[in-house]
Image (cartoon, rainbow, N blue to C red; front, top):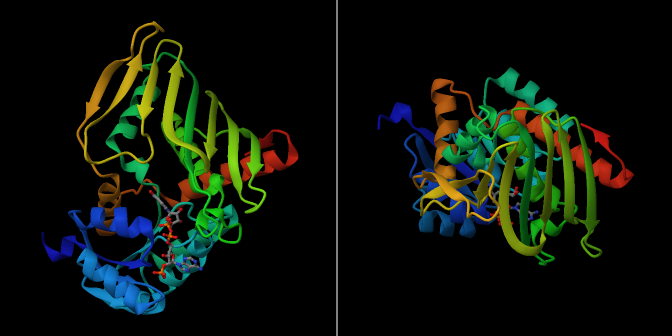
Length: 335
Ligand SMILES: NC(=O)c1ccc[n+]([C@@H]2O[C@H](COP(=O)([O-])OP(=O)(O)OC[C@H]3O[C@@H](n4cnc5c(N)ncnc54)[C@H](OP(=O)(O)O)[C@@H]3O)[C@@H](O)[C@H]2O)c1
């Protein structure tokens, strides 16, 4: 690969998601080279760099974003640090791909839009699921009327995490299930339907010790029909997504943490409740983090559109805000 067709990346922090999933996946990308990693502690950065085969290690985030050889930065910091570090990266002249949720308030996305425009640099949100071939196919099937007329969709996303020290259980750090995983059924229902929900209604339960939301059951009222989902950070781990039309339904298993080591499928059931759903389509194994990294690199190199755009982030955040407000007020809230 010609060097001009590769983007040099740096990573801010030794976060678990970066070390275990995103960095190794990005390293096998066509247009993506991970040049550096930074930690608040130099030894941690050096250890991660050696383990992952990353050339440069820095003992502060500031040093990495000032490094002249770095063109783009991947940010997997705790949620409350996304916004300030995106701004610092842009001010240092770097493109930024930041973990979800990009920010904690939609007003912050509007500021980032202005920064992106002024600087000519790109800011993207790391919603890896939007890069899956399988999800692109589900969207095509639903929007082309393969299920008949769309009626409703339903999703579950849960895991059990009672660790008081985990960033997900800290209010101060922007934790809670809605920010951590409620963003996924939201972004995927918007993606598949190609619409924005008009209003939201939600039941939310908070953890009495952490103060973060640990269970949310949500109805999003789309022009085409309702999408309902339950997410929880203190429930048996499970995930699925189903889309129902007047004639058929599609079931998407492991829709969010989709593995890359085996072929995946979608199952289409055309009506008989006593028949096992037939396997309708199979998809070759792919890594959505590799695809995401390359999509962002290509966006920098060739100006290709990136699915995790700021427009998308702003619209998604507005829905999450309506969900939180609805739970507080006990009524429907317009998005
Ligand atoms: N897309 C996905 O599939 C996916 C999956 C999981 C998580 N995520 C997102 O990725 C981000 C990180 O999640 P994670 O579970 O990987 O986090 P994590 O393991 O807790 O790592 C967060 C990192 O942030 C750095 N940090 C800086 N200031 C900190 C502070 N005050 N407290 C704690 N850590 C601090 C630390 O790195 P240093 O010590 O090296 O500086 C730490 O290792 C979150 O935004 C989350 O929503 C995305």
